[in-house]
Length: 279
Image (tube, rainbow, N blue to C red):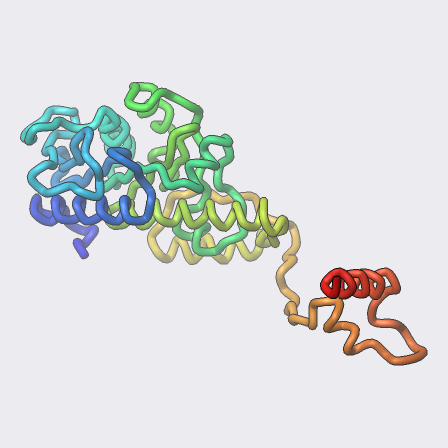
Protein backbone atom coordinates (compact mmCIF):
# COMPACT_ATOMS: atom_id res chain seq x y z
CA UNK A 1 0.00 0.00 0.00
CA UNK A 2 1.20 3.49 -0.80
CA UNK A 3 2.36 5.39 2.27
CA UNK A 4 0.23 8.39 3.24
CA UNK A 5 3.52 10.23 3.91
CA UNK A 6 4.27 10.61 0.22
CA UNK A 7 2.28 11.01 -2.95
CA UNK A 8 1.86 7.92 -5.12
CA UNK A 9 3.55 7.85 -8.51
CA UNK A 10 1.45 8.24 -11.65
CA UNK A 11 1.68 4.50 -12.21
CA UNK A 12 0.63 3.66 -8.64
CA UNK A 13 -2.28 6.09 -8.75
CA UNK A 14 -3.63 4.78 -12.05
CA UNK A 15 -3.42 1.15 -10.97
CA UNK A 16 -5.21 1.93 -7.71
CA UNK A 17 -7.99 3.91 -9.40
CA UNK A 18 -8.68 1.03 -11.78
CA UNK A 19 -8.64 -1.49 -8.92
CA UNK A 20 -11.01 0.56 -6.76
CA UNK A 21 -13.31 1.06 -9.74
CA UNK A 22 -13.45 -2.71 -10.15
CA UNK A 23 -14.26 -3.15 -6.45
CA UNK A 24 -17.00 -0.50 -6.63
CA UNK A 25 -18.64 -2.32 -9.50
CA UNK A 26 -18.34 -5.78 -7.94
CA UNK A 27 -19.82 -4.59 -4.62
CA UNK A 28 -22.83 -3.04 -6.39
CA UNK A 29 -21.82 0.46 -5.29
CA UNK A 30 -22.34 1.66 -8.87
CA UNK A 31 -24.43 0.73 -11.90
CA UNK A 32 -23.73 1.48 -15.56
CA UNK A 33 -21.36 4.48 -15.66
CA UNK A 34 -22.07 5.80 -12.15
CA UNK A 35 -19.44 7.00 -9.69
CA UNK A 36 -16.06 8.70 -9.92
CA UNK A 37 -12.64 8.39 -8.32
CA UNK A 38 -9.61 10.68 -8.06
CA UNK A 39 -6.12 10.48 -6.59
CA UNK A 40 -3.57 13.26 -6.07
CA UNK A 41 0.02 12.63 -7.18
CA UNK A 42 1.33 16.08 -6.24
CA UNK A 43 0.11 19.19 -4.45
CA UNK A 44 -1.79 20.37 -7.51
CA UNK A 45 -1.95 17.33 -9.83
CA UNK A 46 -4.32 14.37 -9.81
CA UNK A 47 -5.61 11.45 -11.84
CA UNK A 48 -9.37 10.96 -12.23
CA UNK A 49 -11.87 8.64 -13.85
CA UNK A 50 -13.32 9.74 -17.21
CA UNK A 51 -16.95 10.48 -17.93
CA UNK A 52 -19.24 7.84 -19.37
CA UNK A 53 -17.21 4.74 -18.50
CA UNK A 54 -18.22 1.80 -16.30
CA UNK A 55 -15.99 1.68 -13.25
CA UNK A 56 -15.89 -2.11 -13.55
CA UNK A 57 -14.34 -2.05 -17.01
CA UNK A 58 -11.82 0.79 -16.93
CA UNK A 59 -8.23 0.60 -18.09
CA UNK A 60 -5.36 2.88 -17.12
CA UNK A 61 -5.18 4.49 -20.56
CA UNK A 62 -8.73 5.85 -20.11
CA UNK A 63 -7.85 7.98 -17.07
CA UNK A 64 -7.57 11.77 -17.06
CA UNK A 65 -4.65 13.74 -15.62
CA UNK A 66 -5.43 17.26 -14.48
CA UNK A 67 -4.54 20.08 -12.13
CA UNK A 68 -6.53 20.92 -9.05
CA UNK A 69 -7.67 24.13 -10.76
CA UNK A 70 -9.49 21.99 -13.35
CA UNK A 71 -6.96 22.24 -16.18
CA UNK A 72 -6.77 18.94 -18.10
CA UNK A 73 -3.19 17.84 -18.74
CA UNK A 74 -3.89 14.63 -20.63
CA UNK A 75 -6.87 12.50 -21.58
CA UNK A 76 -7.91 9.79 -24.02
CA UNK A 77 -11.24 9.92 -25.83
CA UNK A 78 -13.17 11.15 -22.81
CA UNK A 79 -12.63 14.06 -20.45
CA UNK A 80 -13.31 14.09 -16.69
CA UNK A 81 -16.76 13.63 -15.22
CA UNK A 82 -18.82 16.75 -14.59
CA UNK A 83 -18.71 15.73 -10.92
CA UNK A 84 -14.94 16.25 -10.78
CA UNK A 85 -15.85 19.70 -9.42
CA UNK A 86 -16.86 17.96 -6.20
CA UNK A 87 -13.43 16.31 -5.92
CA UNK A 88 -11.56 19.54 -6.67
CA UNK A 89 -13.55 21.39 -4.00
CA UNK A 90 -12.73 18.75 -1.38
CA UNK A 91 -9.00 19.07 -2.22
CA UNK A 92 -9.30 22.85 -2.05
CA UNK A 93 -11.04 22.85 1.33
CA UNK A 94 -9.02 20.03 2.87
CA UNK A 95 -5.29 20.02 1.95
CA UNK A 96 -4.84 16.70 3.79
CA UNK A 97 -7.19 14.89 1.38
CA UNK A 98 -5.35 12.93 -1.29
CA UNK A 99 -8.07 10.65 -2.57
CA UNK A 100 -11.84 10.93 -3.16
CA UNK A 101 -14.43 8.24 -3.93
CA UNK A 102 -18.01 8.94 -4.96
CA UNK A 103 -20.57 6.20 -5.62
CA UNK A 104 -24.19 5.18 -5.11
CA UNK A 105 -24.09 2.31 -2.56
CA UNK A 106 -27.72 1.12 -2.27
CA UNK A 107 -28.27 1.36 1.49
CA UNK A 108 -26.45 4.61 2.18
CA UNK A 109 -28.00 6.09 -0.96
CA UNK A 110 -31.40 5.10 0.44
CA UNK A 111 -30.59 7.03 3.61
CA UNK A 112 -29.56 9.97 1.41
CA UNK A 113 -32.86 9.75 -0.47
CA UNK A 114 -34.69 9.78 2.86
CA UNK A 115 -32.61 12.74 4.04
CA UNK A 116 -31.24 10.85 7.05
CA UNK A 117 -27.61 11.24 8.13
CA UNK A 118 -25.62 8.48 9.83
CA UNK A 119 -25.17 9.79 13.35
CA UNK A 120 -26.01 7.13 15.95
CA UNK A 121 -23.43 6.09 18.52
CA UNK A 122 -24.11 2.37 18.19
CA UNK A 123 -21.13 0.97 16.34
CA UNK A 124 -17.55 1.55 17.61
CA UNK A 125 -15.79 0.97 14.28
CA UNK A 126 -17.98 3.51 12.51
CA UNK A 127 -17.53 6.04 15.29
CA UNK A 128 -13.73 5.71 15.20
CA UNK A 129 -13.24 5.62 11.42
CA UNK A 130 -16.05 7.92 10.32
CA UNK A 131 -17.60 9.72 13.27
CA UNK A 132 -20.86 11.11 11.93
CA UNK A 133 -21.87 11.28 8.28
CA UNK A 134 -24.10 14.32 7.61
CA UNK A 135 -26.59 14.38 4.74
CA UNK A 136 -26.22 17.61 2.76
CA UNK A 137 -29.13 19.19 0.91
CA UNK A 138 -29.99 18.27 -2.67
CA UNK A 139 -28.26 19.82 -5.65
CA UNK A 140 -28.39 18.60 -9.24
CA UNK A 141 -25.65 16.05 -10.11
CA UNK A 142 -22.76 17.67 -11.93
CA UNK A 143 -23.83 21.19 -10.94
CA UNK A 144 -21.78 23.76 -9.07
CA UNK A 145 -24.29 23.40 -6.27
CA UNK A 146 -22.80 20.10 -5.13
CA UNK A 147 -19.25 21.35 -4.45
CA UNK A 148 -20.75 24.42 -2.76
CA UNK A 149 -22.96 22.22 -0.55
CA UNK A 150 -20.12 19.98 0.64
CA UNK A 151 -17.52 22.73 1.14
CA UNK A 152 -18.48 23.49 4.79
CA UNK A 153 -17.96 19.82 5.73
CA UNK A 154 -14.84 18.86 3.79
CA UNK A 155 -12.34 19.69 6.53
CA UNK A 156 -14.16 18.49 9.64
CA UNK A 157 -15.76 15.27 8.39
CA UNK A 158 -14.64 12.17 6.50
CA UNK A 159 -17.68 11.38 4.37
CA UNK A 160 -21.06 12.77 3.39
CA UNK A 161 -24.40 11.62 2.05
CA UNK A 162 -25.67 13.69 -0.88
CA UNK A 163 -29.46 14.08 -0.69
CA UNK A 164 -31.25 11.96 -3.34
CA UNK A 165 -27.89 11.15 -4.91
CA UNK A 166 -25.27 8.99 -3.17
CA UNK A 167 -22.22 9.11 -0.93
CA UNK A 168 -18.74 10.61 -1.08
CA UNK A 169 -15.70 9.92 1.10
CA UNK A 170 -12.13 11.21 1.18
CA UNK A 171 -8.91 10.46 3.02
CA UNK A 172 -5.18 10.91 3.36
CA UNK A 173 -4.76 8.31 0.61
CA UNK A 174 -7.07 6.96 -2.06
CA UNK A 175 -7.23 3.61 -0.26
CA UNK A 176 -8.32 5.34 2.94
CA UNK A 177 -11.04 7.16 0.98
CA UNK A 178 -12.24 3.82 -0.41
CA UNK A 179 -12.25 2.15 3.00
CA UNK A 180 -14.29 5.04 4.36
CA UNK A 181 -16.82 4.68 1.57
CA UNK A 182 -17.11 0.97 2.39
CA UNK A 183 -17.56 1.89 6.05
CA UNK A 184 -20.34 4.36 5.17
CA UNK A 185 -22.32 1.59 3.47
CA UNK A 186 -21.70 -0.85 6.32
CA UNK A 187 -22.73 1.77 8.89
CA UNK A 188 -25.91 2.44 6.92
CA UNK A 189 -26.67 -1.27 6.81
CA UNK A 190 -26.29 -1.59 10.59
CA UNK A 191 -28.56 1.43 11.11
CA UNK A 192 -31.13 -0.04 8.73
CA UNK A 193 -31.21 -3.39 10.55
CA UNK A 194 -31.28 -1.97 14.07
CA UNK A 195 -33.66 0.88 13.26
CA UNK A 196 -36.12 -0.74 10.87
CA UNK A 197 -35.84 -4.53 11.10
CA UNK A 198 -34.82 -5.40 14.66
CA UNK A 199 -36.27 -2.13 15.91
CA UNK A 200 -33.87 -1.65 18.80
CA UNK A 201 -30.33 -0.44 19.40
CA UNK A 202 -28.35 0.19 22.56
CA UNK A 203 -26.83 3.64 22.15
CA UNK A 204 -23.32 3.89 23.60
CA UNK A 205 -23.03 5.94 26.76
CA UNK A 206 -21.13 9.22 26.79
CA UNK A 207 -18.36 7.53 28.77
CA UNK A 208 -18.10 4.76 26.18
CA UNK A 209 -18.06 7.31 23.36
CA UNK A 210 -15.29 9.28 25.08
CA UNK A 211 -13.17 6.11 25.17
CA UNK A 212 -13.64 5.65 21.43
CA UNK A 213 -12.77 9.28 20.72
CA UNK A 214 -9.48 8.76 22.57
CA UNK A 215 -8.79 5.71 20.40
CA UNK A 216 -9.56 7.81 17.34
CA UNK A 217 -7.09 10.49 18.42
CA UNK A 218 -4.37 7.89 18.97
CA UNK A 219 -4.94 6.69 15.40
CA UNK A 220 -4.35 10.24 14.17
CA UNK A 221 -7.95 10.80 13.09
CA UNK A 222 -8.91 14.33 14.05
CA UNK A 223 -12.07 14.73 11.97
CA UNK A 224 -15.48 13.11 11.90
CA UNK A 225 -17.62 14.69 14.57
CA UNK A 226 -19.23 12.97 17.55
CA UNK A 227 -22.75 11.49 17.45
CA UNK A 228 -25.18 11.94 20.38
CA UNK A 229 -24.57 9.57 23.30
CA UNK A 230 -26.69 8.08 26.07
CA UNK A 231 -26.42 9.35 29.64
CA UNK A 232 -26.06 5.81 30.97
CA UNK A 233 -24.84 2.55 29.45
CA UNK A 234 -27.55 0.08 28.47
CA UNK A 235 -25.25 -2.69 27.23
CA UNK A 236 -23.42 -3.81 30.38
CA UNK A 237 -25.46 -6.95 31.19
CA UNK A 238 -24.89 -10.34 29.59
CA UNK A 239 -27.74 -11.65 27.45
CA UNK A 240 -28.04 -15.40 27.82
CA UNK A 241 -29.99 -17.31 25.19
CA UNK A 242 -32.95 -19.30 26.52
CA UNK A 243 -35.20 -21.91 25.01
CA UNK A 244 -37.29 -19.57 22.96
CA UNK A 245 -40.28 -21.35 21.42
CA UNK A 246 -43.49 -22.01 23.28
CA UNK A 247 -43.17 -25.74 22.57
CA UNK A 248 -39.71 -25.83 24.09
CA UNK A 249 -40.89 -24.01 27.18
CA UNK A 250 -43.70 -26.53 27.59
CA UNK A 251 -41.02 -29.17 28.14
CA UNK A 252 -39.90 -27.20 31.18
CA UNK A 253 -43.38 -26.60 32.58
CA UNK A 254 -44.25 -28.33 35.89
CA UNK A 255 -46.81 -31.12 35.58
CA UNK A 256 -48.88 -29.86 38.49
CA UNK A 257 -48.85 -27.01 40.94
CA UNK A 258 -46.34 -24.18 41.09
CA UNK A 259 -46.03 -21.44 38.50
CA UNK A 260 -46.83 -22.47 34.93
CA UNK A 261 -44.07 -21.84 32.41
CA UNK A 262 -46.58 -20.90 29.71
CA UNK A 263 -50.03 -19.36 29.70
CA UNK A 264 -53.31 -21.04 28.83
CA UNK A 265 -53.55 -18.86 25.73
CA UNK A 266 -50.20 -20.16 24.53
CA UNK A 267 -51.30 -23.76 25.09
CA UNK A 268 -54.44 -23.12 23.07
CA UNK A 269 -52.35 -21.61 20.27
CA UNK A 270 -50.19 -24.74 20.15
CA UNK A 271 -53.23 -27.01 20.06
CA UNK A 272 -54.73 -24.99 17.21
CA UNK A 273 -51.46 -25.17 15.27
CA UNK A 274 -51.20 -28.93 15.71
CA UNK A 275 -54.81 -29.52 14.69
CA UNK A 276 -54.31 -27.34 11.61
CA UNK A 277 -51.38 -29.48 10.50
CA UNK A 278 -53.34 -32.70 11.01
CA UNK A 279 -56.20 -31.57 8.79
